[in-house]
Amino acid sequence: MKEPNLENKSELSETLSFVTDTLKTSLREINPWNNIKIMHTNIGQDILAGMVVAIIALPLALAFGVGSGLGAITGLWGAIAGGIIGGLFGGCKTGVSGPTGPKMAQLAMIMVGFRLASGEPDLSAAFAIIFFSGVILIGISLMGISKLIYFVPYSVVAGFMCGIGIIVMILEFDSFFGYPAPHSVMEGIYDIPNAIMHFKAQALMVSVPTLAILFIWPRIVKMVPKAEIIPAPLLALLTGTAIANMNGFDIEYIGTIPTGFPDLYWPDWSKFGDYLGPAAGLAGLAVFDSLLTCIVADNMTGTKHSSDRESFGQGLANCAAGLVGGLTTATATMRTVANIQSGGKTPLSSVVHGLVLLALVLGLGPYAEQIPMACLAAILFKVGIDILDYRILPVLHRLPLTDMIVFWTVLIITIVEDLLIAMAVGIVLAFFRFVLEVSRTYKSNLTYLEDDVAQDLLKDDMKQKVKILCPRGPMFFGAVKQLEDTYAAAESHDTLIINLKDVSMIDLSGAYALEDLVANAEKNNKNVLICSAPNHIMSVLKSVKVLDRVEQKNYFDVINDAVSMAKELSVNKVVCLK
Image (tube, rainbow, N blue to C red):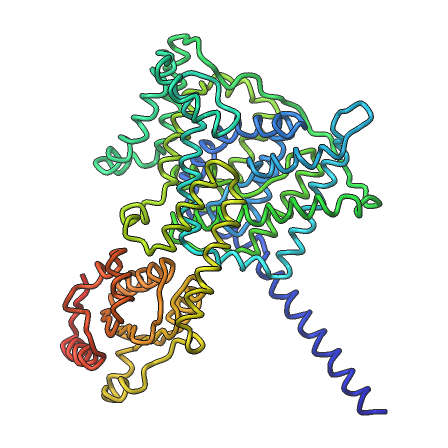
C-alpha cells in the first residue's frame, strides 16, 4: 500500500509544480512593468501621436456607441478604458484599443435577446456580459493559448490588411467630398459616383489640403529633420480645422460631445450562467480582432507583440469598460495604424489617447466640436492607403497559385462581408493547401541542423566562424517560428550558409521568413551564402524577389562551393553582402 501512496504523492507534486511554474511564467509575462519601463523612450512623439489618435477615435467611438444601441457615451468610455488599461497591460507596444466595428456589431446582435419590458436594451446585462468577457480573456491569456495566432499564414494577413485599407478609404470617401459617412461598405461603394459628381466645394477646400499635407510633410521632414517633432496628422488636423473655421464653412463638424462622470455597473454574478455564452463569444472575437491587428502592427514596425499579454490587457480593459458603462473593446486596426503613422512607438501613446478622451468627456469637449468631418476623412483616407501591404502588392502577380487564391479570397470577403469570416475562410483554405502539399512531399520531421558533411570540410578553427543552417521538409507558415528561434540561438559566427537541398516546399510565409533571416544577418554584418535550392524552391524565391537580397556570386548549386567561399571570406575577413 505504501508504493501507490508514494506514486500518488509524486504525481501530485509534479502537478503542483507544473501549475506553479505556469502561474509564475504567466504572472511574469503580464507584469505591466514591461510596458511602463519603456514609456520614457519616445515621450514627445508618443504624446503627439496619442492626441492625434484621440481626435480620430472620437467620432468613431461616438458612432460605435450609437450603433450598438447602448448610447454614444458608452463608446467614449469604452475607448477610454481600452486606451488607458489596454496601453498599460497590453502586449503590443503600438497597439491602441477601443470599440471596433466587428465587436460593436456582435454586441448589438447579442442585445436583441436582452431587452427590458419597455423594449429598451438591458444596460445591466450588457455591461455584465462585457465584464465577464474580460474575465474569460484573462483566463485565455493565463492558459497561454493566444500564441496560436502566429500560425496564421502571411497570405491571410496580407489579404486582411489590404481589405481593411480599402474599407477605410471607401467609408471615408463620402465625408471627403462633403457628405455624411455611409452606414456600410456596400452603401459607400454605391455612393462614390454621386459623391464625385455632386461634390461640395467647401468640403474639398478642407479635405484636399489636409490630404496634401499628409503626403508632402514627410518629404519636408527629410529636408528639415527637426520638423519631425510635428507629426503630419497633427499638422493636417490643425490646418484643416483652421481653414474650415476661419472661413465659416457650412459643412459637417464633429458636433456635441457627451460629457459627465460615468455610472458604475457592478456585474450580477448570480446570472453568470445566463451571460456565459454571449461573453465567451465577445471574448473569442476580441482575441482574433486584437491579435490580427497586432500582426499588422508587427509587419509595419518590425517588432513582435506578446499575444498572451495582449489578451490579458484586453481582458482588464473589458472588465473596466463593463464597470464604467463602456462599450466592449479590442485592439483597433485603424487607430493602431494611425498611431504608428503619427510616430507612436510605446504604450504611452495609447495611454495619452485615453487620457485626452477622458479630458474631453469631463469638460473639454467643446474644444473638439469644431473639427470638420472632411478633415478627419482625409486623415483616415491616408491611413487606409498606409494600411495596404506594400510588401506583397509589387509581387502579387507572381505569388504561388494557392497563396494568390487565399489572398484574393480574404481581401474580397473582408470588404463585402466580414473581417472575421474572411480570416476564418482564409485559414481554412491555407490549411487545406498545407494538407495537400504535405501529403505529397512530407518525408520527415521538420528540423534545422548543422550539416555534418559540410562541417567536415571546414577546419577546426573555421567551425566557429561558419554556421550552416539546413531546413528540412516543408518550409511553410507553421515552420517560420522554429526557423527564427533556431537561428536566434546560433553561436557567434561570421558567415551563414543556408543549405536548402532538403526543403520540399515553400510558401509565401516561408519565403519571407527566409528573406527576414537574411536581412537580420546583413544588419549584423554577417556574410550570407545560399546553396542547393531545388528548382521548384528557386522558382518561388525568384518570383517574390527574395533572392534579390543575395548577390548572384553568393548563391551556389552545391554545398562544397559555398564552403570554399566561406573559407575564403573568413581567411580574408571580407564582408561580401550587398
